[in-house]
Image (tube, rainbow, N blue to C red; front, side, top):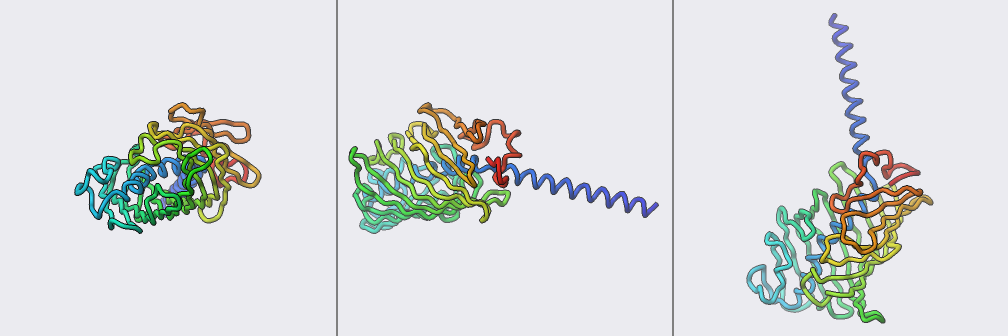
Length: 299
């Protein structure tokens, strides 16, 4: 009898372990590169809003922290929970945005940690450079490390400011997945570059680079049609991002200018809708078999 009970217990435990393993595999398989791309764009926008305001305002302020010189520094662009510190009145100048344990960004993402900005000159001057480093930053529950160099390239023939950037961004997810993005991009500002407010900002974004997932799977990423952002809307209004691997290409189309929560993801003639707010496919229950690990048919 004891042997029978032992046998039954062994079978039960084996089934339980198998079930847990399947569950773990299922969670791992749910990760899609399209959702990672949407999260990256949303989290970048959350931080860029305050970085742009800080880099603009930094040239107007003497050494201070939030609240000491409100008429000189555009603190109204920052959440009440963020503490902004300016190192000195000259250049180079260091600006630190400390989000503490949690601040909510303008597009609704919860952020924590510090962002350190070092600017060589007033950022609105041609040739000015800016470095951005994330320290202990989490956004939307994910850990983000980032190093970025930004340069004011001056105006183009249309009279619009061109701001170039090169960056390496690493996102660590709760389930252990890690994505690393090595990007070179440009923004053509058509409005709002010379003001500290971000609600009047309008720009086109171009460029691309590589995405490496879990240090083993590499994708190429290109902004096929410029991404248009008008910060009076919390979503990207138009543009197409293409992601390619081993001869397969997936396109994320952000629309034709309407301020809505949806982008269309197309691959192999099939189109699925992805929600920009949540960063997940609307038909998420149909997506687990289209995870990034598949050699063909990945999403």
